[in-house]
Structure formats: C-alpha cells, structure tokens
Image 1 (spheres, one colour):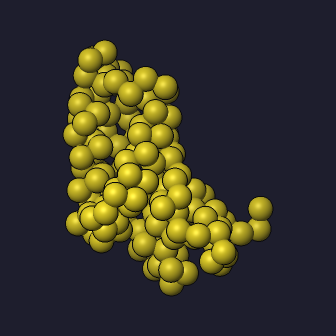
Image 2 (tube, rainbow, N blue to C red):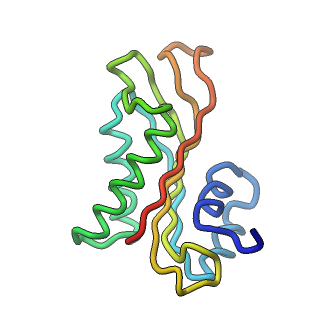
Length: 145
C-alpha cells in the first residue's frame, strides 16, 4: 500500500509522541483535518462526549445529521475495538485513560475520488481502576461522511 489511508494516518498520530506537529502540518497540507486529544473515565459515555465535543469545537464536523452520525459510528467502532468487543467500563470495574485522534479527509492520501471520510483512533491504558492493573489497548473506527 503505497498511499496512506486515513486509518493509518490516524494511527500514526495517536501512537507517536515525536514530531506530532510536523506530522499534523504535513497531513493538513494534504487537506486532512486533524485533532489529537486525551480522555479518561470509567464511563464510556464521557469518552464519547469528549470526542464528539472536540470534533465539534475544532470544526471537524458540522452540526448536521450525516456528519454527526458518521462521527458517532466511528467512535463506537473504535471504542468496541478498544474495549475488546464489550463497550463497558465502570459497569465491569474497568477504567480507561487514552489518547484519541480524529482525522477527516479522503479515504486514501491524494485520492479525491475516494470521498470524505472520518477516522477515530483510541490508544491508551485500560484495566482495573487500580494503578498497575492496566494494559495498553487500541481501537479504530472509519466511516464515510
């Protein structure tokens, strides 16, 4: 795969701490809209709300059904992977502390025919709410707008 897909871009940004701004500027010059943030909670609803709020505040999505719906499904898909299939945290005594990235743009780099997509990646720690009882996890969701 010579061209990077929107998911790979979102994963790169979520996983790296080195030259994040340089990577962001590079992909923004290729017409991607990018945001990287952090969230943590024992309540999955709070994580969803943090990501939705960031996407709205940063003008990644506009207030209309199609864009909000695509974002919601990308978040739920990413959260399902991050939580390994069961989108439950506090109900089963799990907590999450994560970095999230939201990327909007073409499905494939430099391919405007692929249309407008949104990707959400979650990367961080999940586990018991006791320090030292957590482990890394990652989840990704990609949806067309």
